[in-house]
Image (cartoon, rainbow, N blue to C red; front, side, top):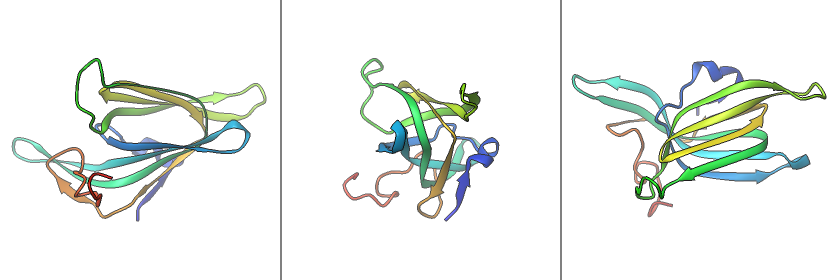
Length: 150
């Protein structure tokens, strides 16, 4: 399966990528792993009047995260509980007083309103299944190989 790493960040886009789940894994020295279950849009395909999407389930894992802030508001817009979607993932270099270099990451959530920010040195992203063509920007549970949505 296809795998991406931190050095390929500038070649990637997470616009309108849907997040089906997230998990925090405790690590050493107070840092941890942030693991996101996403439908990664590999390509936007232009039809005559609309778009279709080349998309695949993927795992996006940020390594050695710290200073996590997470905000997600499903109540204000009064929408149902559905996978949330990202507008973008951005990063900026950060250096600690000790000389340790890392990145400050920001996951801009466009629906519902939200944001996730943290510091970490990098990520890996791996496709978990073959890509599919979809009229939606996300896959349905049956298309992701889920049983009863789980």
